Image: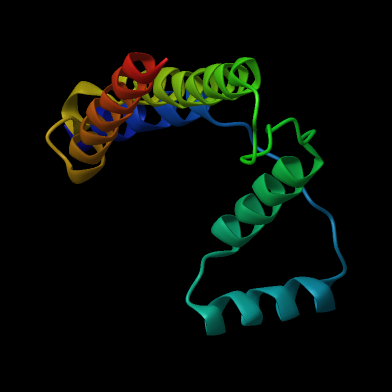
Length: 130
């Protein structure tokens, strides 16, 4: 029975994640592991966080300014933010739907469900303003 659960988890991981191989010298690897251990963070988490930050920093900055005088510009900015929140909502829904059945009573599923409700409410509020 434990093997089936592990197989299910491995299939879910294979479907939702991509493995990246990094080659470094042994001294760099050991030093990095030590830094991660001292900070209380796993090597995987440190690397994935760094990768996410690198991707986000390279994303073009198309966010409208907040000091907008013309009504048409304010409406355009509002549409922009609604679209970004909708992207987050859709991503969270996809994450939530991909959580295996046997993990749906857990804290991550509950938090994801709450996030979906909050994002949906934010979209509705902003659309009412629009």
